[in-house]
Length: 438
Image (cartoon, rainbow, N blue to C red):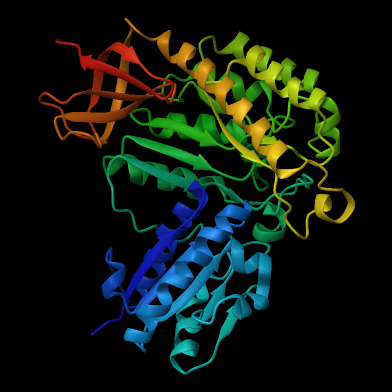
């Protein structure tokens, strides 16, 4: 009887895509996948190390597995992804339940790590593989509506607060033809939407052909004209006019862009080593809105970074007012050992002050989001239905072209349908509407 594997995924969309790759490789090695952790012979935690609280969630889950391992001595637990890559072998000392460790470039060798654990050896594969993109692996996909497709891995930017270069390694791009082939397969299989992924997609480069990300996005949109195309994440210093022109030119490339800024203060952006200042960021915002009127923007923000003053904080608040994002992923700063901020900067903002500033950012962004979403009341939007609403099976949840969440009466529609919806009401996070009768 083949052993069963359960994968719990923490963190970003890239981790979700990696879990699909892992399922495919382990299934090819004879393992069975399960969605029920309680019956699994092997539990894999695919982890994220970007935030301190993310690591805390993983440690809490490992603690919860202690009783299950006592009840089932044969149960194996592997921790894979960014957290073991970050902490390396000392991860074994952090929890007695861990049987093996694997970094983001080790997934082809998971079966060997499992075999070693079955023999009683705690082993780790944490080597970077500079050319590993998993381009030849067909992911295990459970849905038939939306898919994540990594086009590059790693990051060469050395932002002062970020662990990604240390957990994902240097940038490497997937060959453009393999991306196009997978997009075509997804289209033929009936998928309605694909999101191209990279830590910084703007740095994509197919060196054989010289194709940049703008060129790749254009080819993807042409290869699958019936699919919605999204991408994330873009670094402000690298986003190009040619890329934004592709968004403007192709109707199936969605009018939504995630452009992390982290702070509204030029002084803080310099300390963070972001490679741009406030005015340069706003110049890019103006260019984007000139070429794509009505585009929805989102961002990331850090409150209380090293040396941030009250004036710097108010610069962030004023940036929110000026740009008017649809939404923002917001955090207060936590020290990540190994980053340049940890080694050369003082974590000088008290925790209660970080939390106060974060609360002010969230309060302001919620007001702006409410105003932005209210602007859609009375409009008709094309919505790709993704699932039943969490509150009622008589409603569906989907997203507009601008990535706004829309909940609407189900009627005769099902997930996967594109539905014309009239917007009747809005909150700071959701549009509520009704299908338009044809």
